[in-house]
Amino acid sequence: MYYKNLYRKEMIKNIVIGGIILFIAVFSTYHIYYSFNDTKEIDYSSTSLDVTFHEETGEELNITKITPLRDNVALSSADSHTITITNNLTEEVNYKIKIVDNIEKIEEQDCKGITIPREEIRVSIKAPGKKVKIYSLSEIEDGVLLSHKAKALEETKYTIRLWVKDETNINGTDYHYHGLIQVVENDTTLAVK
Image 1 (cartoon, rainbow, N blue to C red):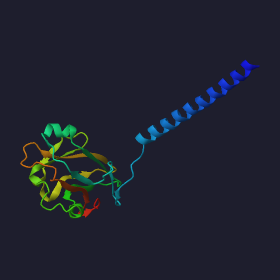
Image 2 (cartoon, helix red, strand yellow):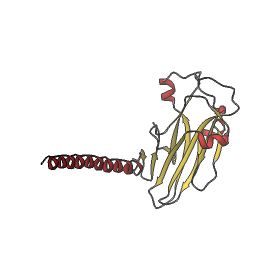
Image 3 (cartoon, rainbow, N blue to C red):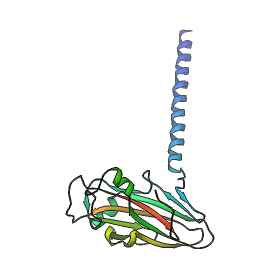
Image 4 (cartoon, one colour):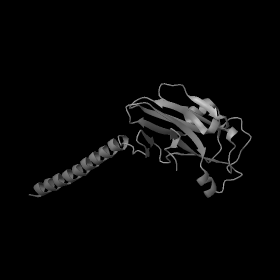
């Protein structure tokens, strides 16, 4: 009788522990699977284009710490900002990707006089199957980083990186830059704060 009760208690304990382990395994698998397959919400939309920013910061580009980098190092180590632009029409659509100053954040943080000069900032843009283009922020005319004619129903994912060039005259943690990525379709700004 004693062994029977001991056996029953051991069986109940094993069933409870097994159930807890199974629950944790199922819950973890579900959570991991959906965190990787989570569809991103469209941030900006028009009748022809959907714009999705894949980072939590959205369209914001910020350099809050000056870490001078060579171009080849920055392309692999600088923070990247991914943006997907989808043409919803069955005809071609022209759009531009621009980098502009985030005036609202500059005023909010009282950054006048401590902003990193545009000639010290490098920016790159990469589209699938195309060569990476690198510019100094001061070289970009009217902030236009890229002009593109999207084919019908085309979806393109871009990677944008921003860093301080290797041979810079500035140092210290007081200097920073606040910018925005804007998508402009036929002179109408879609992605803007």
